[in-house]
Image (cartoon, rainbow, N blue to C red):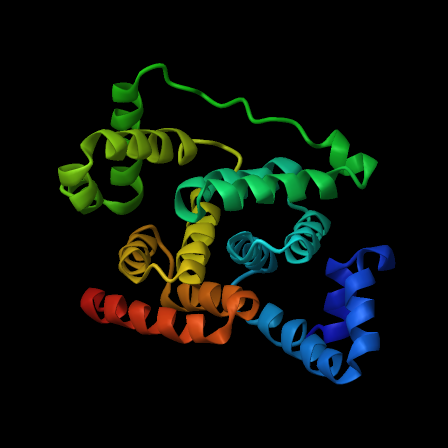
Length: 260
């Protein structure tokens, strides 16, 4: 098994990216003595989720947190692990409807700050050639097809019969059209990466009803129980462990219902 120090060095490519961590070690050596083995020797080394997906979950949680240091630090981790700038930016585009505009705009600003630190990251910072549709109806139709292919027809029935559709249909149609018909259709992130971001953000926000629904969607698209639970334990290290225990309780209800 990779040691905590080895894994820490792997995700922090250069010492200049660790000024805050160094400050914490100076302020409280005991804090660092707990943090390093728990974080790099424990949470990041779980066998149920690969390192890159752990990075997606972490950045999503940090997006909800909204702290400059946490976001910049974990964006550097993701880029050092091989994520592209457009994947990093794709996380915040994906979370626009799950974490909100202020949090995701802040995330994009922090991402650009980090990307501008290195010439190779800046050179790789190219936009996605998205297939934008012209009409709301076309977006809704493509969104319905994407939901059906990923999660099954039940997901379409849930969206189309939602309380939002009954009480605020115009707003709901706009959200559904752009979220499912445009964002989920983009090629910057794979569907599994998108779902990891969504699960982490919903857990970090404490949106339990939506979390249960998306745990079921994750099962429908091929996630296993361990992967889902590891998303929560990974993101929870950055949001707070009580969120993990609450999320696991919600997930267990879905696992039982689905006999998963």
